[in-house]
Amino acid sequence: MQVTMDEDEVRDEVEVKNSINAWRQSERKIMIETVQDLIQTSHKYAKSQYTPNAQRVRWTKLAGQLIWYKDQILKNFSLEAMTVQLEALQKRMIESEEQRERQSMSRNYQTIVFRKPEEKKAEEAQNAENSKDSKSDDPEGAKEVPWKMPEGPSL
Image 1: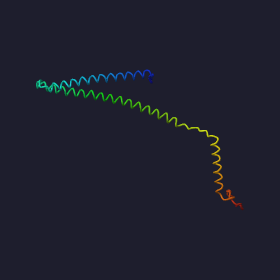
Image 2: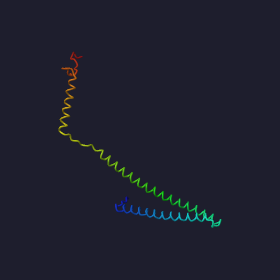
Image 3: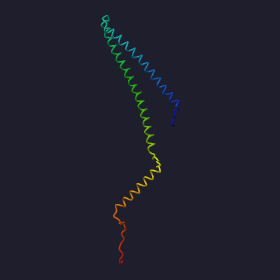
Image 4: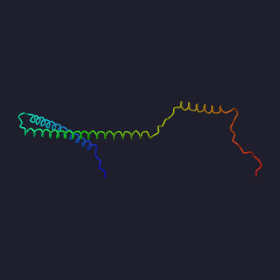
């Protein structure tokens, strides 16, 4: 059982996919900005002379964790970007294959060419000259005679 989708459904699906990707990118940007602010704050407290030594270790550890978290967000973004590029590449490949098929289909048919009357006359004249040239190469009066077995007494 095959399920087919109308063009409207396909178009709607693409629009939904694009809107989700745009929303993800905007949310990811907000997340990265927030994490970057937290990293800067934790660095500031870790380096501050007014922060107690016990707290300084915790702020440094938090900064490291936030950097790792930011790295994970960026990796996910790059994976999603690669997925989008892969889909675009697949679409281009499918289009190029379809174009090749169309070209090969058009190449399979022989082209019918109708020659002009002048071309026909020129070709006939050239053929006549070629036949005269081949006859003139033979010695004068020499004709090819088929070989016959001499008649003699039969056994």
